[in-house]
Structures are given as structure tokens and as C-alpha cells.
Image 1 (cartoon, rainbow, N blue to C red):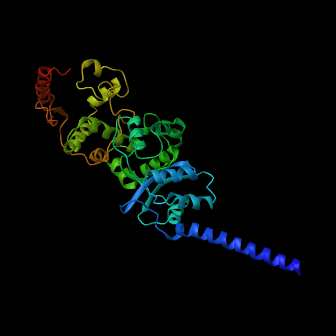
Image 2: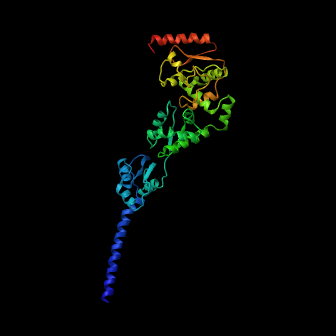
Image 3: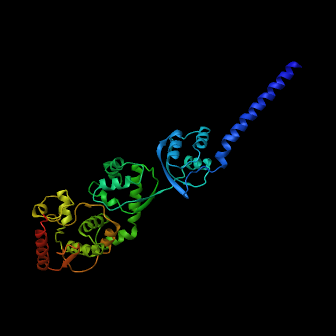
Length: 347
């Protein structure tokens, strides 16, 4: 009997301890499920969690950024869960009033808030990489490495010369932690979507391929300060192409010289022996000299029909141009413009 009593007492004690432990756990974790645990006053905040973040680093970041009211609740909940093998990471929107459980489930399930990735016209792939890196987790060096991967160029059917035509400036929704190779793959899909059957037909109707459209668009983009002139300048170059006249486009001489910032094109520049120099090589260059804007591409596809063969910057330095039908008329405008440059000491 005594043994049975002892066993009963021990059982009661163990049950009491279990009850206390259960009560402690209940008290410890219930707030994580039901109590709001946000410390900010705004409707929501966006957090960017670096890939591979550990549980401890996650608590530290959300505390430092003023997201959590009680970091211990997240710490306790994390201790009861298995951490993803790759750690935490991504971009998320946390709404005011969310519980600890809701916040952790959001992050653990990777229900990310996409980035509206803006790709702008640019002169170099380095500029593209730098601008994209400012909006994504990947750094500019990693993005540039992906953009200049020769194997990737080949897989997508491009070369060093033609690859810039694959980049179509626009706004795209992507995840903040997208890897550079996946980013390039996405840009290729957007390129294919942009050059749909309708646009390819438009290019064919004016006697150009998508590559040639992008190449001419990159030239007129560098020529023009005021977008309203884009279709007219495109029309000049289309007329010269049809007449088998050299384009004699100043931006191509700048590109051949390796300096698109040149303020004045001299004879030494027009004589550079480069396939990009349209002063000495007929037709279009082998590829774009810059990443052309959508506006410039559309200006080529819908260029103004006229009979101008020349254009020259106005002497008032307004950025607008005089358009001419004859070489003689163009020469007068050019002489006037160069006199102004000489007076101002622009070399």
C-alpha cells in the first residue's frame, strides 16, 4: 500500500509539474499567436532581409528597424520552429497590428512583395548594372558579370555587339532577391514579349530587323535632346539608308572614339577606323551604341515621312535642330553653329 501511495504522490507531483510547464509554455506562446507585435505607427513597412539570414539575425534586424514591439516573442517562436536550410531572406510588407506568428509565417513562407524594377536607358552595361543593383539585393558587380557572360549571350542568340538590343527599358515586377542569372533570363523573356509579332511586322514593313531598330534607336537617342524630334531625326536616317548615303551620325564617331561625352566631333574622330563609325562605314553599325529607350524605339518604328537628308544643331544652343533637304542648306546651318562653338571655346 505504501508503495502505491508513493507512486500516486509522484504521479500527482509530475502532473503538477507538467501542468505548470504547460501553463508556462501557454503563457509564453499565446501572445505570439494573438497579440499584435508591431512597433510602427504607419499602416505598413517594407523590410528587405538578406539571403541566408539566421534566426538571431532576423530578430536583430526586425528590432533594429523598429518593426517588433516585443522581440522576445519572435525569439521564442523561432526557437520552437525549424529554420529553413537556406535561412531567411526576401522583401516583405509587414502590416501594423500583425501578430508575431503572422510576421514569421509571412517570412518563412516567402510571401514576398515584388519590386517594381525600373530599367532606364543607358550608355553602358555598367550603368545598367549600377542602376539595377540599387533596387535589388544583388550588387552591381554580380549583375554586370551576368550581363557580360559570353556563354549567356550565345544561349540567347546574341553577341557582344548585339546584346544591348536585348535590354528593353521598362518597369518589371521581380523579387528583390532574384539572382543575376535569373534576372537576365527574365529580361530575355521581356525582350521576346516586347518584340511580339506586331512589332516585328512593323520593323519588317520599314525594312529593318528588331536589332536594326534598336541600333538606330540608340543613335537617335544620343542625337536628340528634345524627344519631340526623335521621329523626325529617325526619318532623316531612314532616308539616308534608302539613298545608300553614309549616316554620318556623330554619336557613332563618339562611340568609336570611346567617349560618348565628346562635345564636338572633329575630323580626327570621323576618321577612326571602326565598324561603328558611320562616317566611313555605310549602313548601320553592328549593334546598338547604347540601351535605347522605348520612346526612341517607337520613334524608329513610326518615323516621320519627309524628304530631309540632313540636320544640324541650332546656333542658339537650344538643343533643337535645323532640318535640310540639300547639302548647301545644311552647310550654311553647320557653319553658323560652328561659329558659335568657336566663340564659346568649345573644342
